[in-house]
Length: 525
Image (cartoon, rainbow, N blue to C red; front, side, top):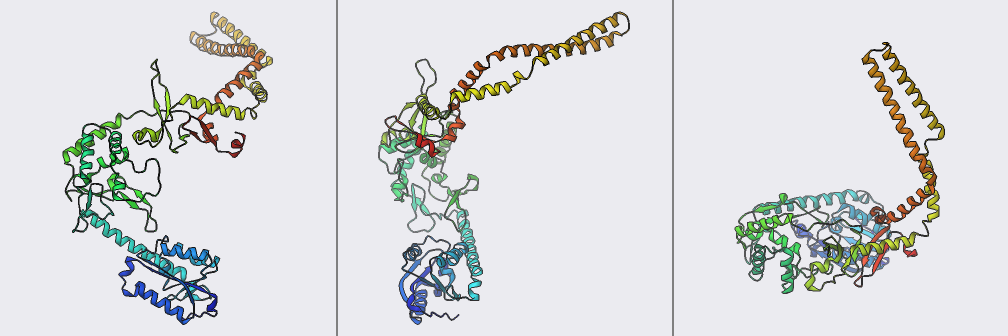
């Protein structure tokens, strides 16, 4: 389609070029040089001023986190560019949702004219080519989806054959120097793996093994491989019990290829989901083992036996709410027997507990009861202006008067006593009828038992009423007791604490910081 630019001097043009590995299979027509040549020729013919050329070589069209694409977007935000030209729509992207977003919303909102040469798309003019653009985007997306399925199928087939298709082998192995998709033992760190299994065979816990490695300064797998750490925390660069446990359970060390532990959500997302062991692809005998099978089995038995001997967990008032102020991690709770042998819970920093020798944090040890008292005391102090005991007393008295104990009046008592008298007369009458031979023994027993049961029930009601009547004179005392119980117990109610408090932080100096869910409470405190 012939594209006409009436006012070329008004535009600062970005020539955008993208090439992925899949595009290379379509031939040289998709090459970077070919795209650049076509775009430059278009700019020359229409006397357009090229601001810059942006090239993403080796990037998939479903990924919009491409470095050069992001640089182009930054220049658009800076108002350096008001026209974007690509060879075709698939160069901009193959995800029809994101492609549509940029074409239909982002570019128009930033007054950017978009042109796709081979598709005849030009957002600066009205044309039928623009109308069918969404369908082109969907077709490009379908192509990307089809390619993704084919690649996944090929990778799955390689996994089933026992070929390694990951980025880096598990710690203790490295890529074969000459054979593709093969791994060999990395003799530099394999002794560390053997030592970890050897220590585990002695019955040593994963935490203890991690502590020993940290004390000796042994680089972690991530440090050894040079992996980039996105976020740094107190655990960064340290061995952990979880890492040791994962290694001890990995069949790769006995010569079996284990793959498929993580699966991408879709071809449009980089996020992966952890798969259950039954979905892993395990192929036996694909490479030289570091650990013999017998030792591996013994380690698994030891790990399995520890599942039932782990320290018990404790329920406590601030569970899930209390954190270390210095490192930000949740506080751990431990039990220490006092002199009389009774349980006494203490809060300690979980980071310190796990990495004591590394000085990642400090102990922060404090009695759980001490923290509870401080938190509850603070809440009581904050709310005493809102919870007026005198007003609560009036409410309690009103509720007591409405309760069941005032449900019987003097009139009701007289009615009950009258019914008891009538039943007593009836019992006397049927007794005389039995003596005079007017009632058979069976009829007498049936009528007598029924009347006696009814009278006993009424007498119980009268007795209950009398007891409750004695309490009516002390409604005020009852109300005071009720209010006191409410005030004493309300702040030990975990549901109330969770609704009020976002988190409690314990500092190294044993100071307690309470962060409320409501800004009004923060202002009061």
